[in-house]
Image (cartoon, rainbow, N blue to C red; front, top):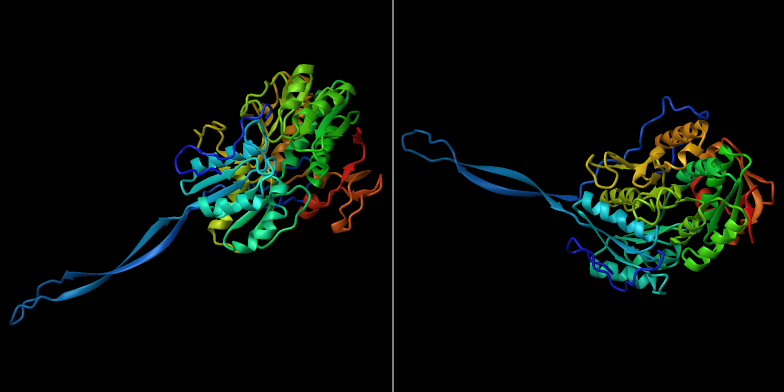
Length: 473
């Protein structure tokens, strides 16, 4: 566990660096309409980390001298009230399921809290990494972070780092917020919140780009486990592909784990053997992008700017990526905690339209004064500038304009791919017995166009692959 008592981090149980590493207010608007849309959601101002304490004291002072038959000095009493601001430290304790080095997931979350520590002097953090991968009990990790580091918010970076552990201990620490990333399970408690970022909005934009740059009309995904999180991601990516290129086919093959470098390599190579010339992955290691470099095909990045933040490749291979700004999601939680809200929303699904403010001279995205919760980012460039200079000539103006328009609409919170499109089942997926959910038969229109699905449905009930996606077994 790390204790940030100085400006540097100290970790325990850290292994050697691995070889590879709220709700969207969607209006019923016609496609392409931006005029009249509301601006960014509130959330740019930093919450003050202070407690206000009133101190009252009595002060005596001589009054004016009055001449009477005898000279008398009158004394008057003045009550003076002073308001003192006492800093209130908020410590985020991170139960990191994986390792920081060589991962676009836990590593990016560490970068997020480093940024918040720079922005907010009242904020600090501590972490224990590799908790799930090394088989440590998350309950023990959480208890240590609370007892030793005085953490008042506890975050589990993978679903297995939080479920069922945080359910078991949340009641013991009623003043602590517990947070858990959602894979498929959205169960919660009063002070155990389930959280995620609407990454799928940026993944739709990536799909538009992938559909435009493929020359074989074959695009592949190396997918970690079968879960709602990954069906939601691939659905948005696929909808983007088809909007750009109706002739393209998306091939999906499962790795089975979030982090399994050798298997990720094997699955990536198998997809390329099918003729895939654009590849992405819903796993956490560097292997898929390495394979793309070796084979000379395009890579579509996920979760982090693998070029600008990690230096794992170049824009000769990475056509575009997206960056998840977990700091924006944490900022939402910090403000709830500082407000003293004992009953915060239990399901927090942060959209692209939510942001935090940055100084213009910030070192992370220089010149940018807002940081959306998720956005296209590649080689430290954002938006359309994130598209590789080498890939850009392959993209027709029509698609470039569509990427621009859809990004602007989602930044304003007035469009969403899951509102726009119907969702049709391929018949592939997994039942969720505890919710009474079977996999919808092939061809079933589960969600019609023009209807925005609820957050709990997107996070916990989208248990099927979209029709048209090819599952490689």
